[in-house]
Image (cartoon, rainbow, N blue to C red; front, side):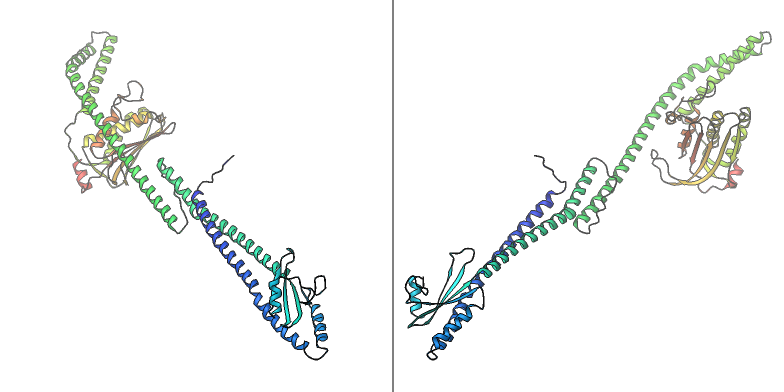
Length: 504
């Protein structure tokens, strides 16, 4: 047998059953009381019958004793009364009548004795279940055998009692059914449904889903409980988000520490290489210059010597960049005008941009924006980023460099306060950086340039300098739509433009 369980109805069903049982008991007691009261009224009619019988007997006796024609007139009156009502039959009987005679009284000895003593007798004849009757025997006098027999049909009274009992039963059933349905509906709407929503919400929260809210519109305890659960889930979600951000920041800090350890190892290794390869490279470079300058050598030999000298210089430069990246040099921190630095770098790289047929556009504010940084490092950061943009551009492309000041918050991995920052944006119109390569653009030796165009150390050095100054670099790129790099640096507080310009 299939058993269907309606969710959220267990408590509502229990409440409905309890209320319905209480209502059934109360209505049953009321019905019993009303039924008993009706029967008591019915039975209480007996004294009234006896009283009316005594009055009738007095009247009939008085008429019976008035003259010689009194008995005849009395019988005529009784005959006239007999036809007045269908449910009441009145006839004469005699205590002296023998069995078989018309006026014979078929009553018990005790009733006969009471009639002989002049007492009224009333009894119910239940031989006819469908139509029971009440028979009242009214004696005329103690010494008179004449008895007035009044037969009253009880069909109307019994019909009233049955109708009353049926009405009470139907009313009880109607009240019980209405109350049960009302209790069931209210139990589901006010208890079952909110409990089901609270249960589902708790299950989602237990599974880690704190989104959404119940929004119970009930202004009762269930509504208050739902609002408290919503507030609790919001607080847990905020704590979860905060914990995830802190965890991510800790992991990023740990990764930076490991990266620093790797750079330190690279620095020690590079220092050893510099000492081991420095002298041989100097010898190779010097001999290459001698061969290249010896006119007695063939042009081909002098060309090879120049190539050897160029590659030796490139190797020396690479070793120097490794040393700059892995060990901290002494810096001269000072107030630097970013606007002036951007213009200077654009002029220095103008020949390279022109050779690649790339247009450089500079947009700096009229008032100088000042940061606290080593002037040489500032120029190195801007040169690396702008040169990257020029090399990534197609022929006829544009590189746009703009400077502004805004309020910004550092990325989560840096966990710094929100504040005012100077932003240098460098945008190109090249092929862009592949999504899988974006996380690696600041790693040492990572490059997507062609052979001979870079060593993969420029952006790594630039990021290290910017981070030491309290800033960060953001990279946005889309394939076939170019790349945009934004350098954020904190402004130098209390530094005037005039001082910067005079220092430069």
